[in-house]
Image (cartoon, rainbow, N blue to C red; front, side, top):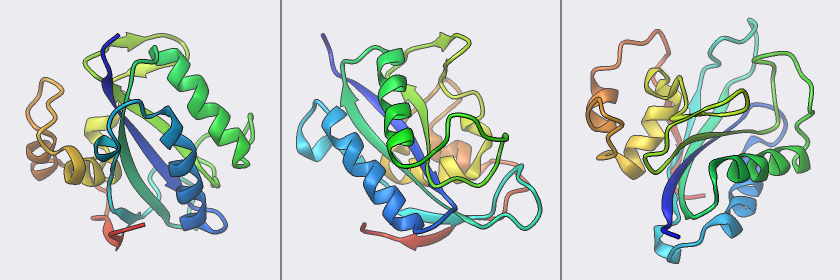
Length: 169
């Protein structure tokens, strides 16, 4: 089976945010089935919370892109297993603070629409905190609306611009 590029967003705003992102990145690495140099890691950006309660701590956000031949729901199960291993509870209020948040953004050109998973991620093109790191590692990727870098440039968003927090991690 052909390896497809899968974009995965990482976020954390509780505890040692950098450590949570590093642990998630390292647990994702075994899911990568391509060449080592094709496991892409964006810089980390610090972002203001979106859709969260007032006073919620800032997030650290990054995107990784790996190659896989796993079916979308298998990859979702694997990412949810990582979230649970890193302390994310099964049940929590929507947009509540979290040690780790792992979202599948895309897997190749797969279009999925189930109760558990929608691909590409339904808010991918609206979220500066996702587009900014994604543009760094895969700015030419096109979801049918133009390259990510062009979408980021013309994004109309109330989000504060992300701040580059750490280039190499």
